[in-house]
Image 1 (cartoon, rainbow, N blue to C red):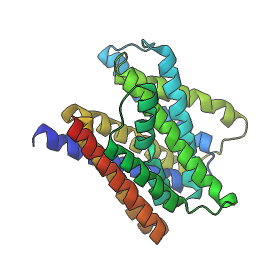
Image 2 (image 1 turned 180 degrees about the vertical axis):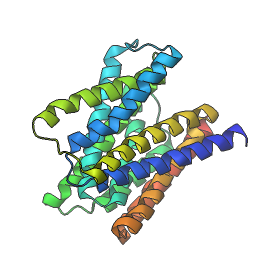
Image 3 (image 1 turned 90 degrees about the vertical axis):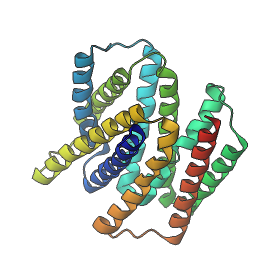
Length: 282
């Protein structure tokens, strides 16, 4: 197997593990979001610390302000995503989460001076239309989880944009260390203030699965980009939507409606156009 195929296999595994992580979050119904975030990042913090010590990387980092900013954006993104998973069908939550690359496109243009191609403008329009079909706005209280899911996608895109700048100054181990450390510590006050439920045996297994899936997804994704360029792998991350849809149907009998299916297809198409444009540009 050549490096390109290894990268594709690893990014597909990453998409599967991210789908399983999202399903586990949804499974842990009744557990406060703060507690889910705490256990989602605790294992990642332990692993990141081990890797920093093993690879003799810096814990403090070089660009501390951006490391903290990336961590805050990432935490807000995860918090909104976990909240949405508690109230929306699994596939809808994941589809809206996949809007983050398009926010990256806009934010990178504004803050990093990256140019947006004509085809990428088309991809943005398709993505917005797709998100609208998934949300199906009725302008009542039921709209709130969708808005939060979309806002979470924006914060995730903001975090990825900061990472694109941080790659020039800090290692991936340091970036993950900051994110998991800040996310873990930030949840402690919420849990001490009542946002904590003593887990039973099934929930304990769920927490272990949550941390394992999240960490495995992160490692698969990180190693995938070592074997193949990000531009070549980006399109395969959208299989996360397919995996999540299948899991939602099997576990919760969540059969996507026509509008959600069309919206998801438009977002995937937009992702493909963006992928094609980046590949052509490269």
